[in-house]
Length: 60
Image 1 (cartoon, rainbow, N blue to C red):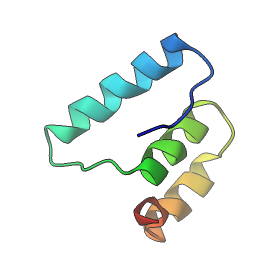
Image 2: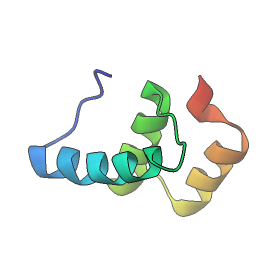
Image 3: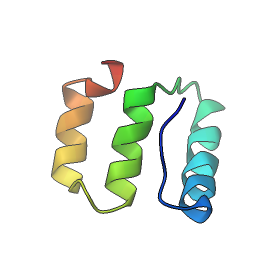
């Protein structure tokens, strides 16, 4: 989805998590992957992550 990651280890780690959730029906979007990446890299707090989910920012 053309979302940049700082290194291969981070990409693989996040991809495993996203893949696991896809078995449960999660449909990733570019914006959703960016939000997950930012949270995992500490660029977004847990409170900001919850707010982004409530506001459905992942659909943008």
